[in-house]
Length: 444
Image 1 (tube, rainbow, N blue to C red):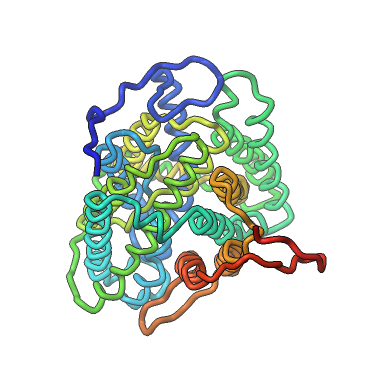
Image 2 (cartoon, rainbow, N blue to C red):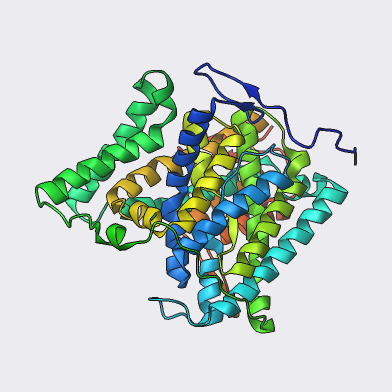
């Protein structure tokens, strides 16, 4: 492996135009802070939802998402634009390991934390191996057709969450669709710098629309601000201690493999968006995510992963500066230390979050197409066609496999399915493959 002679951190070049901003470039401080806030807003719904589903403290999870993002930034030397938030891959196994009933605080949270730490350790070890041996074996295990299928499966697996968020009532649907249109209009038609804030501005339009219709005209359940008024401006999170039970650790630790696939897909998608190859940073990316998961588990937070929502924000804004994520991490820590800020963000109505999710998850799915195009994946070959097609359907359908006490969700099933199908179908001889209209297509 060639030694990494890059400086510890990039020298970010200041750019003032309206075009793409690369990871080693930066915007003025004011714009960086606002765009960092936009990334926090994009991740907030999912990062707050995941801990609630597991009985964790959402404010603590937000706090550790900020800490995790800063850890990741340092470990990758500021070269990979990523936000780390609560991973949904842990939900099923945490519920199984703790026997969580589904509402209120999880009484066995310590047991879950021990398992999360075990997953973080395994994840870090994988990262060390990749950093020492290179990423070639990862590339052979998961070539572009596989990573693209995984990225598409992630986006489509999340799609029902987005649709459900705007389907509660006809008003919810229209507010959600208005939010989608607003994001698109800002991204395409807004003047100058405003075009870089489609998620923040589009979400704000959805929020204000719902506020007028619900609180003003009484057409829906009003947004309640009593929690904001009652919350303190500053307060330390309620940290928790892990409990190391072998059974729970064996159950939760394998989630690390799903996190590897998610992170690999993220790195590949960022590479496709920016036109750069980040493969040599894969080991560091895995180590950073693993160490962040360990620290989060030690304090009472959820396991963390690179966030697809923030990848979607980068896709629509074309701003990849890693300094945005320093700002986002610090803002998230501030939210975690301020119950009042956290309570305010939690007032964002479901239809607005659902509308933003439609955009963001759609862009994630579209990033898969870009991976395939950039890599020149030949879909006339049966091996590629079957790998992508089957994995995408498994992910979109959220097929869950139960292996004893371990439950593998749709993203994990799609990930392992894509890998297995690709490597089992080695005899990919030239020939004709039937296509949907009854004709044939050559495998050349």
